[in-house]
Image 1 (cartoon, rainbow, N blue to C red):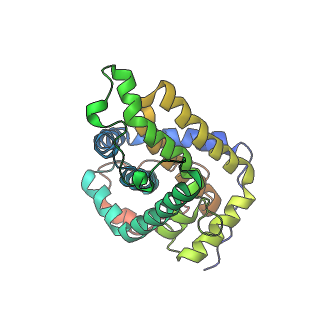
Image 2: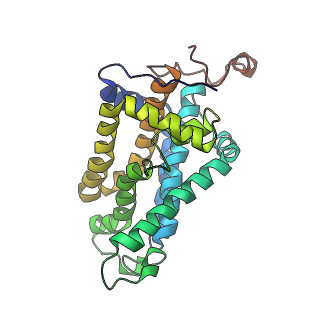
Length: 267
């Protein structure tokens, strides 16, 4: 399969941000449910950094697939979302585990402070539920600070030298490319669009810091936004579709959509 990534038109970053927000609005009810689910597991898993990292990065990848489905079909039911994620479960889980494993090794070898036990990447008693502040705002910071930190590092997880590239995951799941081919094609698309991709990287760093400090309750929303942002940038560069596709009416016959490829560039 020969796939030639495109160079995005000028103003790509602002266009992608607008389109990502439109996809959040299109599936508002579903995204709200996902955010509430994220708040639940963030509250439970924050004592286990490695588990929290797996859930955080896996959720970000899942949001890419959910955004793609919303763009193609419009409103999404919970059962449809689970079926879609289950069909990509092997790639999603293996990719997540690989990135988090590399991050854990880097943390343990290079970033751990002197005197901090190596198993602190597996379990920590810091910010445990029984140690949450009585101040609600500070308590939210305690719960969401790690997910915000993990989200900020996700951009680097997408760009591990020689292992991952920013568009590798959607190339594997939405285009069906094998791991190494997806890495090469993803890296080529990134090089051709270095400016807007660096802009996305800046958003990955700045927005989690802003939300972690002043608006911690918005951290789960950022996961949904960045997932949609990754998808719309991938769609323009690899599928040549510069705008969100019109939403399919909820009662549209399924047989009509079945004649088109899910990744067709036709409106």
